[in-house]
Amino acid sequence: VNSVRLPRHVAANKFFSGYALVEFSTEELANDVLKRSLVYAGAELELKP
Image (cartoon, rainbow, N blue to C red; front, side):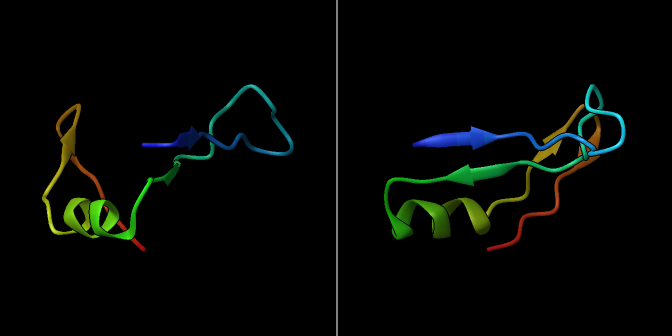
């Protein structure tokens, strides 16, 4: 993983928007992660390219 960004709401800058932008070092690594079923704190994560 090269970077992870957690955007915040524009109106209330202290609250996260509920999504993350993740940059991988290769397209192959990104595709491998997209094939997985990931869960965080009991919630299934929705992964999009």
